[in-house]
Length: 113
Length: 112
Figure: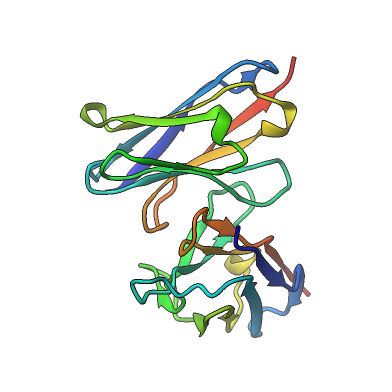
């Protein structure tokens, strides 16, 4: 059974770094890519970035300078790190498996002092 | 980036009725491998998006045949027939052909 679950702090101060973890089960990270997608409150969906089965990464160009995605295959975990957070980064952050059919429940991140 | 334009922004439908949503891309979504990576999602309030259609016209596992996708190149349509209460929410199209992947702005389906 394929499952993804995001975890991380709900509140981050402006200019600080966000660290999120996506823990997966039911599939291998070495055979599937994992993507991050975010959704500001009341708004649409935005692709953030991805880590491919071979370990390479792709990032949204608007976020690239602040973003890093990595993984630990032994723990079936994918990590998102975003620095210099701004209030505009307030959003629900989802992780999703390649193919688009499986998503985590999302984690709400609020950037506020 | 490829711009995905969905119309209409909102839609009112009667239970049991039929409706359709349009999605247009700013570039052809035909990949060099011959596939067209156009997807349709439904997001219900407070939930994660759920995949309905992948690669233009293929229903994801468990999706009822009331949902159908069609189109090619830059023009795509999602049709919903015999609308049920569980179909209400926001529909998004999504392209994975060109990087970065991009979503349409969404179409909110409401009851008339």
